[in-house]
Length: 579
Image (cartoon, rainbow, N blue to C red; front, side):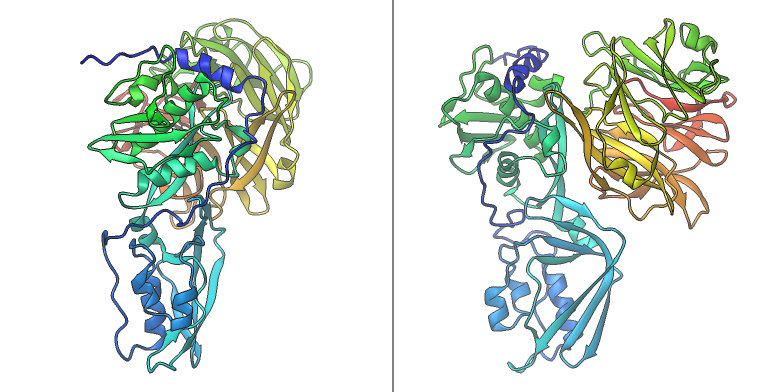
């Protein structure tokens, strides 16, 4: 049978109906009872822990309890064997997870008391949302009794205490996808689910419960108000999700929810998803119901990491805009250096993939102002629109024709195409420090900022919230608190940041990647770079660009190479990708 496909571009029009006339945050989300952090299985998966040995010391009992907490068997029966009878009966293993470093220490401070000390990596709440640790020291005292003839813990903390490698082995990172306010992209909301066959059902439960507090105000949830009629079933590579919906649910909401479920469940090696309403096909007009479910290809227009065709990298050299493909001048006066630009950004028309609104910063413009923001159409004349003592490099997102920047280190400004500059409410940003870098995520729902504080540059991520009359950025959270001297940041994709920061061990600035929630901080190669990198550009589906020692480099094959392989490095700085 030939699968019927409807053009993916139609979906955003339907989603606009879903979002029109209301806040981006549904107010009627149902309360979902989550009985486990991430639905452990009933059978052993992976490495299973050892039971207590006879005559074990208090330190060995506490270590065994921590090791056994990494089991994925429901209710953690082995871990309970390290507890006294009362503690085993009352201990709750579903109150979240605390993750500490592998190099933790166990010390018996007095008879029957053991202190556990280690670096706090982070914590996982009952929704599977990870919060990165601040780099502080975790310390917890365990009290033990030998009334039974063997040392057993009497006061275990509720929830799980896991070492970092055990957390990585036991939990899988999976994105719960919600919709951006324009309804044109799904937005990743990272969750961590216990490895095993219960993941599809656990993920759908979390989608219904709603987005994490950090981004809830910036996204829409088409599944709000729905309820699972039965456990998500999986046959081969197809999942079936049977839901009950409110009686007034619209066809646009049903279609958007179907796309949301498909994008989310596809991460679990499921090629297609069938969504039912009370056991029957959805029956949405214009959207054929197919017996073998629908795939992400049916909703390709919502790709969170879609890369605009022809949106090649750019950079600045001698005040002129250059193409990263070969170093040639960009079209128009900006490419000829007329405005003396030191940084720039360009938006992309989502309908045509053509380059549209452009904004650039000049510190050499006439008029006496320290810095001037110019704007206009790409390839055409630019006009001054704003002055200040300084501007961060302009930035764009893939969902709206607008450019953002921060003026004078504190005032967030957005410039819509054809409009005037508007101040964005970001009341808590100045309290973090002076902003030197500001980058919108590809979907426009998040913003990454580097602020200068007492210990140098620090990286924060906030949420862009769009109400009927105002736009704001709020809910700032530190995502790489252990890094110091952060220099620059870009978006590798919708859920992964790439940044430049100091590496104390190497005594130099190096590239890193880190998840948007702070998990998975990892240094990236510096092989091929001639010296200290000072600026970085990243975008979905594109090779990162770096400026180092005043020359431009691109990442290819695990090494940094010149823009044209085999050619001399080209002078340049402030790289960016149109979005």
